[in-house]
Amino acid sequence: MSLAFKHWLVKKAQDPKKMPIPTIITGPGVASNLGPVAASLGMKNPLIVSDAFLVSIGLVQKAVDGLESAGVQSTVYGKVVPNPPNYQVVEGYNVYKENNCDGLIAIGGGSPMDCCKIIGAMVLHNGTKAPEDFIGMFKVAGRNNKKLADQFPPFIAIPTTAGTGSETTLAAVISFPKKHLKLNIADGVLIPKVAILDPEVIVSLPASITAATGMDALTHAVESYLSYWQSPFTAQYSLSAVERIGKWLFTCYHEPENLEAREQMLIASFEAGVAFTRANVGYVHAVAHTLGAYFHTPHGVGNAMVMPYVLDFYIEDDRMDDRFCELALAIGLGSEHPNAYASKEGKRAMTIAFVAKVRSMNAAMAIPTFVEGMTLNDVDRVATRALEEGNGEGKTFNIMDFGYPCPKTMTMMDMDKVCRSIVDMEKSNVSKM
Image (cartoon, rainbow, N blue to C red; front, side):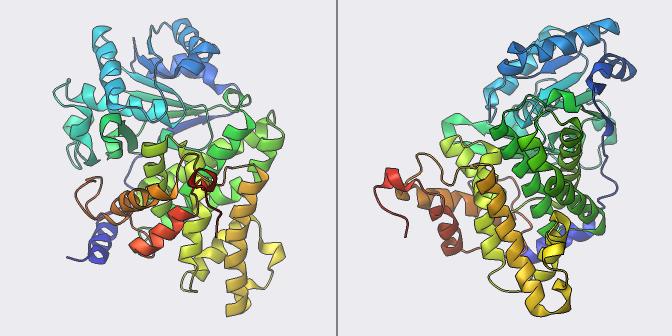
């Protein structure tokens, strides 16, 4: 069975409207409603999963106090690190059980949310399964096991960045440091019940984090829109996210305390999450995951850095110009190309302009242009692993045995070209050609 036919079967079999979407509570100060929301879900002692930084600045304590004011006790696991390793999931699960917790609250970016989701998976199986047992698709509760899914602990997500979209996705990423692997877990039961989108929570984000997470959201929106699994349902979310990001990301970057801009970026991240959790992602993520595993490259930075080169590959011919024109219009390039759809040449010009826009956004926000420490000697292993994830080849990855639903298939030569573009040439002691 060919990969194309497998992707066709998946697209025909899925109904993106049936997958749950979290209830969202959005607006300045809404995080103060955490206590009543948790109580409404039946929580009496939830486990708060976060990271050391958010604990140190008092954000987690505010959540604890808010819960207590509503008569809800809580337990904190605040040790999550970027690219959460499997052993932290086990630690968090043990804290959950030792304290007789009855719900989950994730506060943070993608890493705390991912860790929290997989802790929930272990709770669902009462610790009889390890994190690695959930790698792949629908291995937590399965596709149609509603009775088991209903036993998943109530789950609230409070994002502290506007980028990952983890507060609405069925996916979680976990790393296995000893094996240098970073793998996906995906199951509908991992989608939070409630997402609290409070712009006041993210006003203090450094400009570099605002940039990286914003471009992460854009990557989700773009890859889900270009995906073979794209549907009218996902397309509306993808394009809406692209439009919001094009309008508000630079405002967030230059005016960090602008609450309207921050809220719009939180909504954009959420919308992109709705889209990609149904239409999936592509080669940009395949490379970014590999960079995270080998070089600890922050996920948003990896996505932003790689995206223009993958888009270059897609636009080598004009087969995808219609979709790129739609992306260009959404991001705000319509006034520069008012008659783009009038001719083949106009469509091509708008396609090229969209990729140039992505590059200019990276440059304007000082996104790194190469992976620190990655030399030419690393290209083959990075390209090989990224292609395995993207195309589903080999036995190293069992995320999806047929890879991502990319609109155009890369060869090893294509992937090698992408990976060479992000090499640290100074460490390689050569100049970029």
